[in-house]
Image (tube, rainbow, N blue to C red; front, side, top):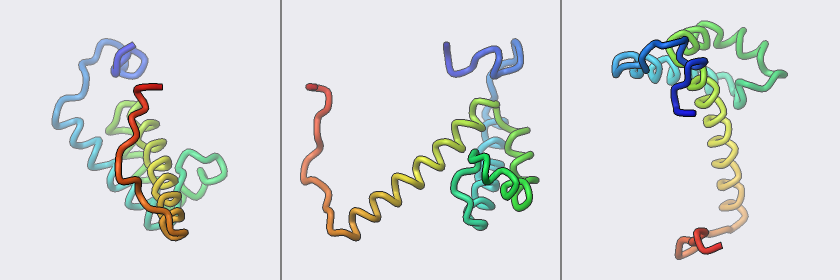
Length: 109
């Protein structure tokens, strides 16, 4: 199954053009800025949904209306994963961890 499937793209509608993609990204950025301003990390967490709607509901609606459904979920999951990853890296660095002087090659496993 490709990046755009019929269920994601409402039948036979063409994939989003450049203007539609830009509108999606702009509304995503506004929604994510609102989440950050309100200290909401995981906008998909059922325990946070009320808080998300109260504080950022308009931005969320715009985001969902401007983006393909699968993009909405992907961007929210990616944001949470990136935040979690960065916090873990920050914690390790605070404990004295340092980056390896080389990159591991996992392809030989």
